[in-house]
Amino acid sequence: MLQTRSLRKLLATQVKLYLREPIAVFFTLFMPVALLVMLGFIIGNEPVPELGGRGHLDANLPGYAALVIGIVGIAGVPIETATRREAGILRRFRATPLRPLTYIAGDVLANFLMMVLGVVAVFLLGRFGFGVPFHGSLPSLALGVFLSAAAFLSVAYVLGSVLPTARVATVVGNFLLFPMVVLSGAVVPQQIMPETVQNVAKLVPLTHVVRLFGGLWSGHRLSEHLLEIFVLGGFLVVGVALAARFFRWE
Image (cartoon, rainbow, N blue to C red; front, side, top):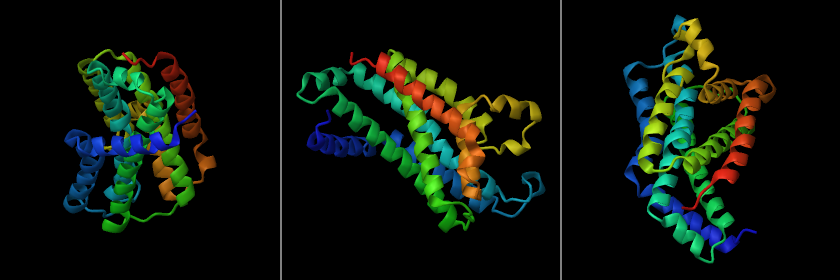
C-alpha cells in the first residue's frame, strides 16, 4: 500500500531535485520552447504548399510538444535512474521505512508532472504567444498527452532497469533518441520527407505521439487515431510489465 503522507513529501522533494538539475530543466522546459520561439520569429507561420497550406508553426507545434515526451522518456529518466543506482541512492531508499512502491510512485509522478509541464508550456506558447489555432477538444488532447507520457515513462523505467551504469544509459539514450527525433517528425515535418523515410518512420514510437498530438490539436476525434492509441497502449502495458520484472535497487 502507498504511504500517502510520505508520498506527498517525496513527490515535492523529487520535483525540487528535478528543478535544481540544469540539464534536465533545459531539455524538458527550455529547449522545445526555445525551438518554437526561434521558428516563430525566423520563419513565421505563413501557409506553404509543401505543408498542405499550413504554416511551419501549425505543422511543428505538436512535434515540439512530443519532443518533451521523447527526451524525458528515452534519455532523462533512464540516466537519472542509473545514476541513483550507481551512487547507492536507491539502495539507501530501500533501507528506509519508506515502502518501495511509495518511492517508485513518487519518482514516476514527479517525472510525469515535469513531462506534462513541458508539453503544456509548448502548447500554451504556440496558442497564445504565436496564435496557432487550436481546433480540438481539451479533454481529448489531455488524454492523448496522458497516454503518451505514461507509455514513454514505462519504457524509460525499463531502460533504467536494464542499463547498468549512467554512462551506458547516456550512450544508449542518445543512440535511440536522435534518430527517433529526426524520423518521427518531431523537428522536421514528415510531409516533406521521402516516402521511403516516411514508411520507416512508422516503426518509430515517437512518430505515433507526433501524429496523435497533431491530430487531436487539429480537431480529430480519438477514434480517428486508434492505431496510435493501440501502439502507445501496447508500449504502456508491456513497459509496465517489464519494468516491474527487471527493476533493480542495486
